[in-house]
Length: 125
Image (cartoon, rainbow, N blue to C red; front, side):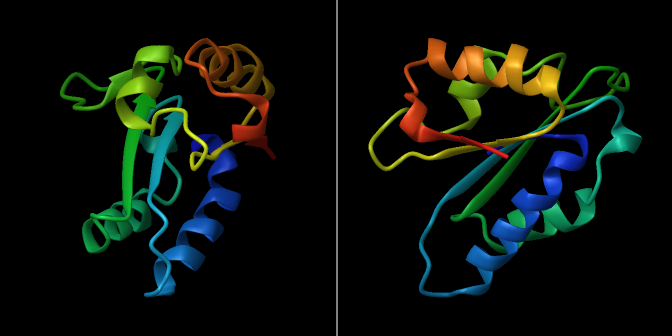
């Protein structure tokens, strides 16, 4: 999953649904892009899900303007970030993207395609 700003809302609905079903073994990874740390919507809930379902969900943040002690990424989502924090392209891989147009058109899609994800592996809200 790749989300930017309010694009987290459909992702969180899916994350909640999957993690509430004990028989669902879907693994989810999320890269969540924002301007500043204060802009990270629903951060507490995302981190709680990650800590209670570590084998099923992980989250990684990137900020345009990170604080000095920021332990995650900074800047636009890029190929290295995707390669490190999302599953590799495969038949069983499905990447969901939701966020502002620049995130989708200049960061997510071009870098996913560069890494070998096909159109069938990507769904954009």
